[in-house]
Structures are given as structure tokens and as C-alpha cells.
Amino acid sequence: MKQGIISISIIMSLLHISCQKQTLPDIDSGPQHTGYVTIRGVPGYAQSIQFFFSVPSGYSPKKSWPMIIALHNSGSNANEMHVAWRLTADSVHCVLLTIQGDITYDSGYGWGRNAEIALMDCIKSMHSLVNISMHKIFLIGEGTGGFTALEIGLKYPKKFAGLGVLNGVYDFHAFGKLADQNHPCRIYIEYLKHDDIVLDALHAAHILEQNGHQVRLKQIDNDTKSTSMRDVMLSYLGILSQENR
Image 1 (cartoon, rainbow, N blue to C red):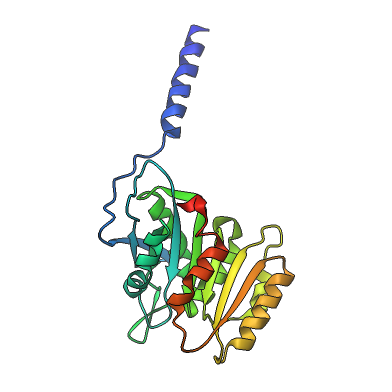
Image 2: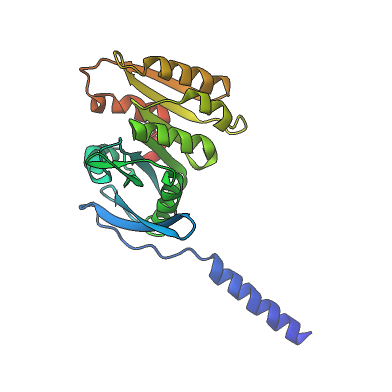
């Protein structure tokens, strides 16, 4: 009986140790930081994916923080996207993560069949570096990055608090298959007034709403800068709420 008590005590100690949170490092809120993940989408083939992240001023690993993941358009890259969104993320006290597309496209990068693996591995890596709130991860994207964000976000609705699509490319026929009516998403879709994807955006919003998602469709003039509309999206998705401050 004595041996049994000792064994249980040892087991409980081991369980206590395993349940303790990993000690996260202090992160400087000044610079933008760089990381890499190695993905294996195709058997026997490994690919290194670069990502950039930054933390807001006042960051401390002692509390959890919301995170914005911003996916770039085809032909752009993660660094350009990070520069474009850094001040916005900092102003709403969010960690910012931008990921390099998994394929080369023109003078930059685009999103291919390994985009989902790259995104999920980068999120996993971020959890080992920064204290991220599990229920406050927002996935947004511009252009083809917007469609990629929507496609992955609909596939894993429980992982993301909101999805944002800025002038994306819409394959609205696929959304009905991806939509999970048991886990509706809050989705913001923005499109240019005179763009050739206007009808696609309208169809996409209609199908998403039919599948139980909450959708905000916003049309902007072609001469309106997307940056001026960010507060509309951030407010709708809940990023501007006092809970994130």
C-alpha cells in the first residue's frame, strides 16, 4: 500500500509539471521579428516558410493578447504586408503575424496548395513565442490572400474569431461546401465599386449568409484607400472592442 501511495504521488507530480505553462520570452515591441517553419505538404519534400511578427507596445507575456493574421495579395510578400498593417495592429493592441506565400508569383509570392499547412504551422510556432489568446485570433487578407483567409477560416471556424476579406477573389461555389453551420463565422467582405469581382462578392455574401454566417458587405469607391476603411472592418469583427484593450 505504501508503494502505491508513493507511485500515485510521483504520477501527480509529473502531471503537475506537464500542466505548467511554458515560459514565454519577453518580446521587444519595437522591431518586427522574423521566424521560419518547415512544412512537408508533399511526401519527401520540405519547404521553408518565412513569417514576420510584432507585438504591441506594452506587451507582456504574463497576459494573453489578440492576434491579427494578415495574408498578402499575389505578387506581394509578408514583409510588405507587415509594414502596411503594423501601425493598425499596434493601435488596437494586437499581435501581428504575416506569412510568406508558399509559391512564387511574379516578383513576389502567392498562395498554393500548401497555404493551409503553412498557416497552421505558423500559428503553432507563434504560440511557442508569444502569449496569444486562443479565442481572439482574427484572419484577414488582401486580394488572393483574402480568398485564402476565407477558405481556410471557413474550414476551421472554431480557430478564428473573425474573417476579413479585402478586395478578394471569390470562388463562391466552394463556400457552401466549406461552411459549417454549427460554427458560424463573423465575416467582413470589402470590394471596389467598379471592380470586375463585384458580382462574385455579392454571390459569396449571399451563400455565406444562407449557411448561417454573419456577413458585413462593404462597397468602397475605387479612389478610396483601403486603409481608411480598416476601422469599419476592425469594429465589425470585434477587434476594436474594449475587451482587446
